[in-house]
Every structure is written in structure tokens, then in C-alpha cells.
Amino acid sequence: MRIGNIEFGEHPVFLAPMEDVTDIGFRLLCKRYGAAMVYTEFVSAEALVRSVKSTVSKLTISNEERPVGIQIYGREVASMVEAARIVEAAGPDVIDINFGCPVKKVAGKGAGAGMLQNIPLMLDITREVVKAVKTPVTVKTRLGWNSDNIIIADPAEQLQDCGIQALTIHGRTRAQMYTGEADWTMIGKIKQNPRITIPIIGNGDITSAEDTARSFNDYGVDAVMIGRATFGRPWIFKEITDYFAVRGTASGAQPEAVQLSLNDKIDILEEQLRINIERIDEYRGILHTRRHLAASPIFKGIPDFRQTRIAMLRAATADELMSILEDCRERLNSGRGFADRQAGAI
Image (cartoon, rainbow, N blue to C red; front, side):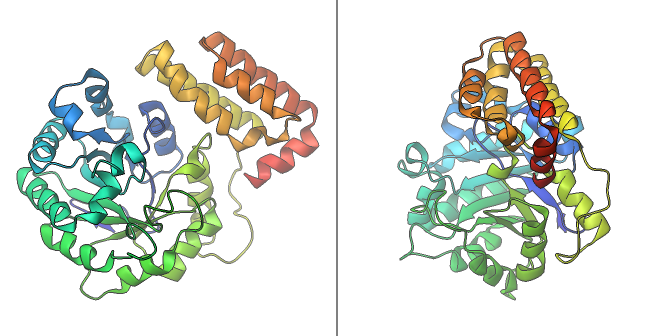
């Protein structure tokens, strides 16, 4: 699979762009553990054009995380074109246009998935952004606005005609938000369309190596993008790449690769905290990291984890958060039999 001059090889798995999630520390770890490409948090075109400091800061990328994409969203052609030019100056490998975000503050104002109700404008924005930059432009979107309007088949061809170099499809409608099940059947139909020649990237409900293999084998996608299953679990990419390195298909036993221990995984989360504090600052580094810690599946082995989770989300200093993590390590190791079974499953 190729996007522009980037060759990804077989079975590439991407980290999805997610607001308040895909900060630089998390991206670096996901890249280290096997993500074929990572994306920044999405960027508001309007805020970028106005030089809003918090938005501009999201354009900071590192050579260590390449290839990396920056995703923009908006509802006006002019601001999206100007934002794309600003983003290009930051040096990403890909500029992605978000036509899929379902949240009310975005889609309700006509941007993100709101564009699924205005396909002509979606195409105008895409066409003009492609013309304005030399960096490869891609698009991420959904199946349609709701179950009565599954319309992705036609826009997929039209977006390709606008010059995009890959299309990511989340297998849900805007109305579904993140509920119900992703419909990969429709993603597969888009990929099988003989008129589609650009890579199709599938997204939705991928939580394991087996899910990933099934997506490649059953639906023929060129790449898979993972979102929520990465929270507090950047090593999921290692689990997937190990799986394909050993098996290459969805059949067979667990990979015979070196497995990360429970202590390894806690070390990774502690490193994420240190990276974010170093590259952002202590206050915002903690804000970005603690939501990952609270969501990490490795802590399921702790009885009554709810109180510990609350403490994580309230921690205000690095020392406090690190102390909570070390307490979790001790508690999990004291019940190693159960904890190991949990760690082996995640």
C-alpha cells in the first residue's frame, strides 16, 4: 500500500486522529510499538487561521514519529484552504480532511460528519485543498448521516476524482456516534468497487490482532485504523505486528513473539507521562496522560479500581500520578496469577 511516496507494505495499521488523545507522547509510543502511521489531534481550520495558540501547538510533530498526518476540519472552503497551507508548512507526511467527526459541536455546525449532509460542499473543500498543497491529501469520513442515508458509495468515487490519495471509512453513521456495531460490509463494498483505485482504510471496532486480520482477510482493505482500543494501550500495535509476523492470517494460535509483561506495560505508561511533561508541560502533560491511565485495560485486575481511577483523574502533579501507578503495580503484582491472566488477554 502506498500514499504519495510512502510505502507501507502489507497489513499496515494506523493510529486514528483523536481529540485530547493523540498527543505527541502517545504518538511516539504507538510508533515505537508498530503503528505504521500516526495522526495528530484534529485541528480546527478556523482556529488555525486565527492563530489560536492551543490549536497551533497541535501542529508540533517529531521526525521520530514519521510518517505522521495532521488532520483538519472546517466548513468553509477559504479557511480550509488557508489552514491546509499552514499545516503543510509544519511538514506532515499527509494532510487528512475530517468529514467524520460526529460530535455536536463539530457535526452540528456543518463540519466533520456534518458534511455528509452537504456533499457538494464536501467535494468543493476537498478539490480546493488538493489544489492548494503539494502534500498528499486524504479524507476520513463515515457511511452516511443516519441509517436511512448510507451514501458513502458515490462520495467515495467523487472524492477520489478530487485527487485524494486515500480514503478512511469509519463503519458507522453520524447518528450512531460510537454506539452499535461498525458495518464493515459497506467498507468492503467500497474497496471492491472496480472504479476505486486509491487505498481504502477501514476503521471501527478493531480491538485485537484477530479483529485486524479479519478486516484484511474478509474485506480486502489496504490498511486498518484503530481508535478507542488504543487508549492506555499503545502496545496494541506490537500485538498486531507480532501476530502478522508469525501467522500472517486470522487462523492459528497466539504469536510466538516476546510478550510484554505487566511491569513492562506499566513502565510504558509511566514513560508516556514523562514524555508528555517533557514535550508539553507538567500541567497539560498530566491532563493528556491521566485519561489514558484511567482507561488502560491492564488495571482490570485491581479490585474496586473505580476509586483508583478517580484518583488518577484528579492527580495534579507528576509525583502524585507516578505514586498511584506504582501503587497499582504493587497491587497487581501481589495478585500476580489473576493479573497475568488479565495482562495476557490485553
